[in-house]
Image 1 (cartoon, rainbow, N blue to C red):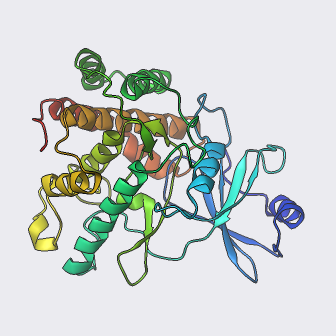
Image 2 (cartoon, one colour):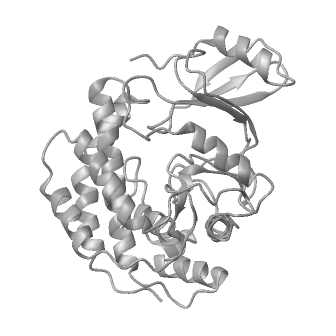
Length: 343
């Protein structure tokens, strides 16, 4: 299904609803991301970003661009950097799906944590700021931010395991024994709810962040589709999950990399700094959260694969490649469940 954008419709709508907007407008689709198609909009005076739901039949509650808009708008002027939000269009008749307009944040985006071409002090500083923002995210006062109702009460992990199991089953294309085993193990070893309830991003990784062009400060955290009120350790585990993947274009991880030679911290050092920032003595059951992160990502990329097969993936070629990693993530998830506590 077409991922094209009706520029005439966009220009007409923004001329009527976005103060200060003046066409003509040009659009360039970003080639990263597999969920919500995202476009750079250029006008003679400034640039914006348009993010929309993909076309086609979608899973219930998926691609919630309205939730992305709400949470980022709530975080403007907080310690969590986000792009400025302009407007949300819920009228699907305008371009065929719901969309929102936000600021274009100029900076650099690192597709993987090795940050090729960056010197060691900058690498270290980037990762440190990544940790700072993560801790700040989990310290957001959700009541003051107007986000107390942004997620349902109760055991976040239990809800998430149930939700992503359903999502996975709904998009399953072939039987994956490792995924079946991981789903069973997550249910059998699920820790009791410890009462922690914070804002969570849901897909916190370096490639979902924009940093200064010539520095290490994070300017914006992107891709809030999976954000909700949940358990903060799931976000922390999301970072460590990526680092444990193979390096390179597909895995974009740090497995087997000499981190010290690149100025990068160990998993343990990053977690310890996070704990220090949040005043935590230790993190119990981290292996479970890590296993859960691998499971959720496996379910997500299974959905990506299904959309590619159905013809409505944002980047079909990459979607087919990424979809082959479902059993890899599942196997790593099973291994992660055996990890000892982190102090």
